[in-house]
Image (cartoon, rainbow, N blue to C red):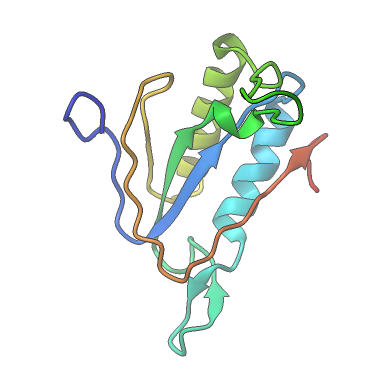
Length: 138
């Protein structure tokens, strides 16, 4: 929510918080999009994580989150120098949403660079960190 207005919303699916680093590129985004739509995190008829977002007819909400790149090793204030600037990050976030949409998964996004309230009902809970480097999921 930004300024009291809902900008992106989904039902069942994945909330994806994305931190972009200076060395990230299109191949990384493409690998991440492929992983997100195909990873088996959605429940099957027996309640086991055995279906992908594609198979479950679910959606993905993509929210840019530069604070995921925070370095808290020194001092008491996080450093965000490891986060890519908007000139790199915004097009890569847009590409990610576009790649997800291209395969038929409904995708919604937050507002890049905005102060947003993000609400989540975590059914599981399942929280994963997916790291992509050089076009490969690490």
